[in-house]
Image (tube, rainbow, N blue to C red; front, side, top):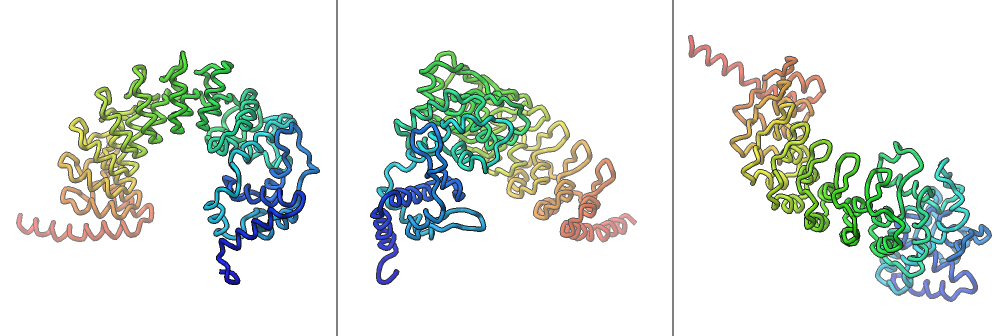
Length: 475
């Protein structure tokens, strides 16, 4: 409480004072609060000032409209502050964000307003004059990055007629524009290996963002090949499936001539990406198409089930395993099965789903002789190890092609818990050397895993007496 008033009352009274200010002060104060409280990330001072200088619908940007930060602080009646060290403009306290969030009527359609401002800026002549190369210095256009990355996020939440019109203007000419580069840099780490010009059409962008209304409008315009591939060799459908935009997936699949199985340069289909990212609804939609192969491998032999198992998406796995065509034990080009991938990643639920199938061999080695248990031991996946060791078919001491046992791998990687689990098994020989003559103890010693060394030495300490007793008996 402040002077007998609840904090909410203080905020309410302050906002009323902001609204009652003369001239542009009221507009700037409320607009600054709207941006700071609804932006997708904290805004730098120069970004906020440029955002407030944009005149909606203008094709130019007038730098004379730029307000100073001190002016904004004054207009906001102390509800915002400048973090000078980070040059970020923030709300005075987190409770103000909570207050604004709980009173949505304070701002009228904030996300559509922000989208309109961002799109106005991106459609302006100064921005269109920028080339994708060389890279643009943020000081030259400080508001460009935020607009490029987040206009779609705001538009998807609230798409006004104005924002829709501005978006279509931008997307019709989306090839080779600077916003493409800024967006794609955030999409994939492989962007740095791509050579300009960057192929990423307005339809690709709309599908990527998941804005169905824009996808429909662009398709109706008819200026795009529905199966066109971009710089990643992704189709619009691939982007929609990869990002889990089921509404856009439905829209695209309704179009004449669409290829739901069109693969990228790794021969991965939209289904493969949807399965990998756990988008169950998209997986169901795609599997409803006869052309879609539920067990189609990519260039590395990995099926949609393999990808779902590796990422631990159990719901997708169950959907795929309900199809007769799906082989739950299908090896990839290295002989790795979905079980091996799930074991390596430590997804216990995925491991149990696969082990429930009779076709799945819990001890199936890959082309290098490594079993699911070896993978789990190497990665220190203790829960998976216990699940596998509960199956009698799983050999806890099985060497791979290099003679390394699960214990060797656990010792090599320094996973104490994994070593302890394996040492509890009588069948496990802690002194088994690999083809280079290295035992689990020598591997642990070489890599400085002191606790593992101690565990192995403790196990070996019993060996001499046992050996001695056996020799005495023999004599």
